[in-house]
Amino acid sequence: MGTALSTLISDLQDENGEKVISGTTTAAGATGYLIDTARTEADDYWVGCTLYIKASTETTIVDEEREINTSESATGTISVTPNFSAAVPINTTYEIRRKNSRADYKAAINFAVLSAQGWRNELAIDDSNIVQEDKLEYAFPSGLLWLAEIWVEQWSVLYKRTATGGAVGYLDDTGASFGTDVDGETVVIYKGTGVGQSKTISSHTATRLNVSVNFTTPPDSTSKYVVKKTSVEELAPLPLVGYRADMAAEIIKLGAEPADLGQKMIIIYEKAPVKLTADAQETDIPSRYITLKAMVKIRHKEAGEEGESGASAKFDVQFYEAQAEFFKGQNPPYRLPRRLTEYPVESGVGPNWPYGNPLW
Image 1 (tube, helix red, strand yellow):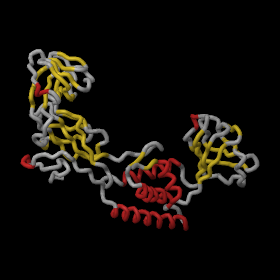
Image 2 (image 1 turned 60 degrees about the vertical axis):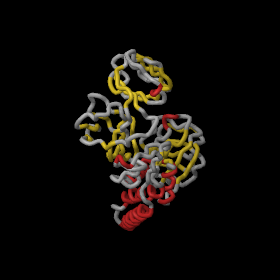
Image 3 (image 1 turned 90 degrees about the vertical axis):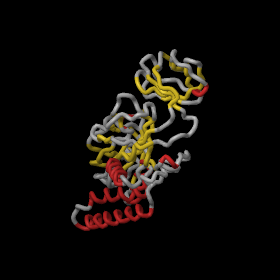
Image 4 (image 1 turned 180 degrees about the vertical axis):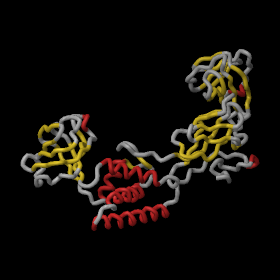
C-alpha cells in the first residue's frame, strides 16, 4: 500500500524536530501579508520561516509558499516576500514552517524515491502490442526503466485472411466459411484499418465474426486478421531474438519480422520510480526508507555550515545514511506473484512462465 506525500512530509517534520504552526486568518489581508490576531508571538518572531497556504476561498493562492520577512504581535500581521498571487482573505488556513519549505521536503522525498532505484522497483509485463506485418519498431511500455526480456506467443492460427468489411460489433469476410471452431477464440487485426486490436469472438456466421467487445476502429477491406485458438493451452511463448532497445528514441527495433503475425508481444520490464509532486500521488517504497533517505538530503544542506550546527548535520548525514542501508539490508526486493498458467516443460520454458523461467 502506498504512502501519501502529505504523510511522508509529516514524517520528515517529526524526524527533523521541526515545529509547524497552523492557523486561520481572522481578517482580510493583502497580497503581501495575512492577518491572524491569534499570533501573539514577539515582533519578527517568524522571520526566516516559510508561510504555506493550505486552504482558502481564494483558490489561486492555495499551495503557495512564501518567506516571512516581518511579523507584528500587536496586529497579528505576517508579511511575506514575494507577494502571493492574490490577496489573502479571511478564514484562510495556513501553516508556518521553521526550517525547511514544502518544496525542500518534496525535493528530499524525490531524492529518496530515486535512491531506491533498482532495489524496490516493480517488475511488470506489457502485452498490449501485437506482432504486425511490415512493422519492425514498437514503443516502450510507459514508465519503463530497463528492458528485461521480450517473448512472442505461439497460439495456433485457425484462419489468416483479409476482411471485406465490418462494423464496431463484427468483422466480415465474404470469402470465408467459418465453422464452430471460431466461437470463444480470438480475432486479431495485424495490418490495415484497426491494426493492433484483439477481440474475443462471441458468435459467428459463415462469413461474419461477432465480437464480445466492440472494435474501437471497425475493420474494413484493408484489415488483415488472424483467428487464434486461445481457448486451450498450447505452446509456451518463445523468447524474441534479434532486437535492440533504443533508449533515446524509446523504441524496440527488431532485426526481422517475427513469423507469427497477430500474436501478442510480451515485454517484461522494470518500472521506473515515479517522482512525487502532489499530495494525491503515492509511492510503494516503504515510508521508513523514504524518511531516512530524505533526511540525508535535508541534513546535507546544513552540513556545509560552520560551527556546531554544521558538524552535527554531518554526523546526522552519516547516521541516516547508515540507517537507510541497514533498512535496505533487512528488506529484500519485491517479488512478483507466481503466474498460475502452466505451460508444458518440453517447450524449454518450464511451468509458471515467466516467473519460473531459469533465465531470470
